[in-house]
Image 1 (cartoon, rainbow, N blue to C red):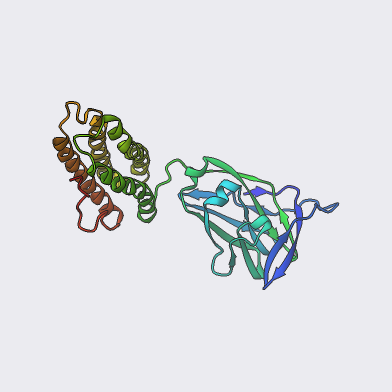
Image 2: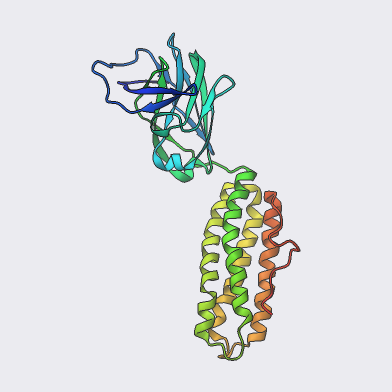
Length: 289
């Protein structure tokens, strides 16, 4: 439990029964709120949870003011069975819970799109309340720390993977179309230029996949296999400088198509672990021939 220090008041304007904040300077003699306390919020993966408790001092609105990076990660706020949710109703557009009638205790849970540890290892949030349904008071900033062991749910891991895969799949499709046009006149310079976008996306994907396998252990092994499949495909891309300069184009395309299919198969194994549909409807990769 943490005692609150000096508070700052802001005016609330009731709009459809929900308090909206208009910032004002702290009035003279605002003073401290005696004996008022709030649990230090805890983080568990994508959630931040805290319980307000007051001794004989009911409040009508309450919530947390988040820093901008955390606000960008904000998805929703849960006010419990007696609270009314207003995601941007608090001071400066902060997430807010309303209670009518007023309560002396409430548990608030804020959910993010990504684990809070991925946004910042530690950060400050500011609790606030309205005790009269007309003005807000802000407490002292509270520093909270996200546990490093935060793991993803299957659904969130799936969302992460979709983001990784979408960029790669778009580049694969574009690159295969370029490769289809290669012939005996294609220079090594042109071949290198045609595949550099895909090579860059694969590099980025490997790094993101390594992070994902740590965040979602059930898919660790299949993600490792996909990273190996990426390595094999990148070895093909690294060889294109020899196209028509000693490297047989037909043999290279056959090897590339095989490794691309291996990557699709590996991706589908990952998708199976994450509850996602197949990367290509029939399970086959596009061909360069």
